Image (cartoon, one colour):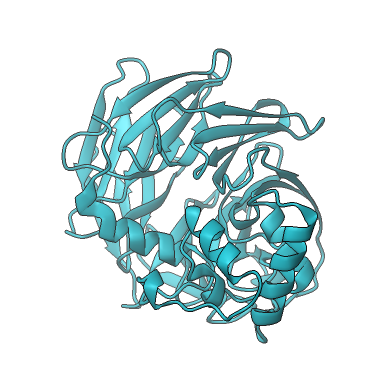
Length: 412
């Protein structure tokens, strides 16, 4: 029942390549990658390819020796002598590339960014979710487990998933304390009961695959996007699943949020459009965006129900007015190559992360004054794919490439 959809391999490969920092999607054959000669070459080729493509290394934006050492330490535990050999080789041959620093903008707010390393190295937390009592959940996509940290004490737990290679992607805690997640690689929705560690799984219908991001609305209904061009919902009482196809063939529903009316809105990462969903019927209406090359990746909704999104390939933050259909956009501080990704709103302030710079930059945008402020992420971030606001007015982030999650406390 839970077999990977091989017909979807091309899509999955493109997304994996696009998600990894600095990887060009045109490069699809590791056989074409030739690492420079050196003492560590054979070790790297034999070890690194067990988890990711070897072309990540030459196509990445490079690091200092300290940066490579920190990055490797989040992936695998190596003896000191071996680590020294690998770090020296990588720092010599793949140093940090010029032009990759973020543009840092001063402003009125202060932030404190705290980070926690996932216990399982190489688990690559994909999405975060705020939990009860100030905790953070994360989806350990590469480690096939759901993680949790108490931000007050630093206690961490992990919940292994029984279905092999589930590829947990997005997750959200519901009002009863259960955690819903998307089994992206094995085409199911999962519900984790943290009290027992048990997981209920809900297979997707035929033709629907690679669930992406889940949310829970005020009624407790679970909504989710699927990379196959669908949006679905699960009634928590009846456990009935209903899935609707987007009007445009080949669409790619990605991030999703609900507004004050309980209407889900999502972004189509493969098209210049947004989608809104009738919460009663599940029918989808698409809204075209003005720039043909816009590819919105994540979405956040402000208190006035304005839809904000990150235009990943163009480097813009944008606002869509659902009443008028008008769009406004602002170039991100680090410019057109900044690759804005994870986004959230706290009141009238928009928060998001630029994922091209090294380190990633946390960006604050005051929608009233239309001014930016930004900070470097301490560990580098390693591509912050998603972030969420908490009821307390803080932010939780998944620092995917450096195997961490973070809490951002804000003093305005």
